[in-house]
Length: 132
Image (cartoon, helix red, strand yellow):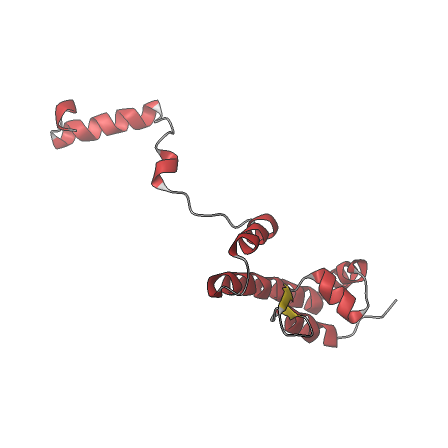
């Protein structure tokens, strides 16, 4: 089991700032805590422990996650990554969702309070039901 070293702060950010490539230079994956642990010959448990006991490493890990998000977005937009896979990772790992469209809300019911508000506004503006 390796001991924590300050160099891991820079190493994790460097690792998360580039797509993984195979020996032929083709993209083989996106950076992750698992791939970082494998590259450094450490365990995920060590990473978790170091995040708790070394605030600078925790900050570096948080920054690495932001780098990962940006890499996924850029990779999908540039065509270097499969956009469906990038979308899945961004939504499942980071809670990012596609924007809701207006048609999605058209089926929602209008509350009674909102109905009264609309009726009052229409009355004040001089609209009747036929003009709407």
